[in-house]
Amino acid sequence: MITIELYNPNWPIYFSEEAKKIKQVLGGNCLTVHHIGSTSIIGLPAKPVIDMVPVVKDILQVDLCNDGMEQLDYVIKGENGILFRRFFQKKHPPISFNVHVYQENNPEIVHYLKFKEFMNTHSEARLDYAKLKKELAKKYPHDMYEYVSGKNQFVQEINQRAGCQGTRIVHALLKPEWAAYYTILNSEFYNPLHQKPILQSNHPSSTSQAHLIFSQGSLLMGAAQFEFLEHTTAILRALAIIKNKQKQGFGSQFLALLELWIKHQGCSYLVCHAPLTTESFFKKTGYNPLSFNVPAPDYPAISLGKKV
Image (cartoon, rainbow, N blue to C red; front, side):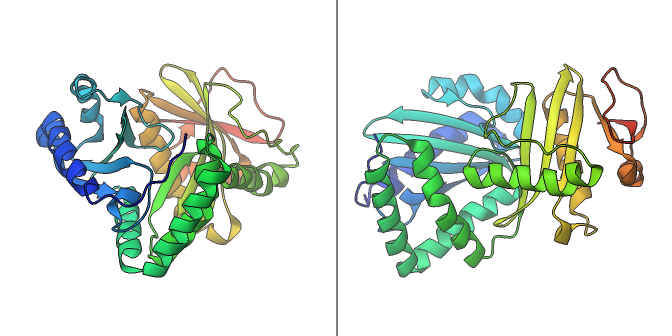
């Protein structure tokens, strides 16, 4: 059940005590640990869950610490929907902990800290957020998805007011993310190729696929569809950026992050059936003609690939 409690001055103490244990497990890879989320905002009612962000030098090294985290009673969640994150969760009523580990310079860190700073210095925003959280908890006492979805617009507005402009990639999960995913791919990828639009289903079609959203601040501006063909290869089924953000380097940035991500998943090659109108874009970013055993699409395309 979702329960909103009055602000507890012990929450920062619980954070400090747990952060010491986390830092010890992560060892020299850990640079610092930040207290984030509602329990880090003085005076704000919140669920009794301490959120924290350990910042590390190398995100891949965190996987070697899973045994240590399990010894602290954490459940290993992997990325859990956000690329380049490692997420751990411990539920020990009356207090629980969410640990979001990021590599240094990841824009997510700045997002969390700017949101925290803004909320701690703007009392009217705190009051509005407290009211919203209580209303949502009353309306959806057993539905975490709807509770989180209900907060999304408010959080995005605060991020915008706080000046959060970093880029991020997430798996489509919330309703606005799914809506943006289908709108972007249909308008900027499938429709120009005279292909049937993909139908909105709000869930991945298979466990081997990834449906990703690329954003800058609160603006959802890119979408990509992946499929993992085998242990070493992934195919990029579709990639698109909204029209007013095209030809500004965001497509190349999005693609570079996707290449790094599939490399983290253990893949060595990224392949695609690139529409002929995008051939020069892919070749400029290191893609070369490469045949692979996947049926060609109905639209004019060239088979390209790159070792990542």
